[in-house]
Amino acid sequence: YELTQAPSVSVSPGQTASITCSGDKLGNKNVCWYQQRPGQPPILVIYQSNRRPSGIPARFSGSNSGNTATLTISETQAVDEADYYCQDTTTAVFGGGTKLTVL
Amino acid sequence: EVQLSESGGGLVQPGGSLRLTCAASGFTFSYSAMTWVRQAPGKGLEWVSSISGSGSNTHYADSVKGRFTISRDNSKNTVYLQMNSLRAEDTATYYCAKVSSGYDYWGQGTLVTVSS
Image 1 (cartoon, rainbow over the protein chains, first blue to last red):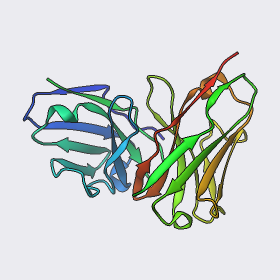
Image 2: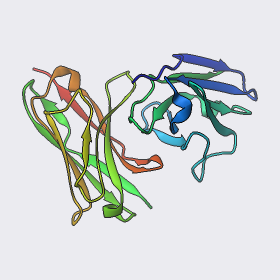
Image 3: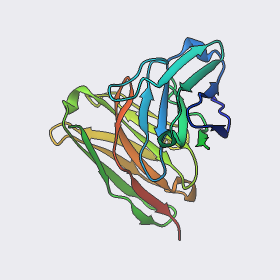
């Protein structure tokens, strides 16, 4: 089972960033999203496709339908610049990751 | 406060063995499944193995099946990853993580380098 992510996404500060993750019938599965800054372990930012753990800003949201899950970051800040990984919790497979650049 | 601390990484020759240890605190360890995830230098995340809270159920990625063994000691709040027949492609930072709805807490990782 494979999950496909775009290698990179760029966004201007204050704008909305959308990071997608594609997989066969992914909308029928639970998806997690992780943020990883350089030299740091990953942080869970979305679980069960659209739920935020405590401590994660409300700017982070998730959706999942059809073959695509989406992580949306509204009012993007410089601190959001990081790699983002999706994961299918059924198979534990990770997507290849998307580098978010805020410029 | 949940804390996870990995140890046991280092330099090993191809074909060699290492045992990684993850010490946990700050939560009811025996209630939580645990997992190992690795990340090769400059690459993405790869799930390696998971174990249930009781230790009775284990799962492995195809890439390590038959070579790696996950186990846990609930009396010591510790999870292990025994790695045998190591290959160059096993070179990575190995993270342990607590499993809840997703991997909600991660350790800082331990680096394993397989090279002659």
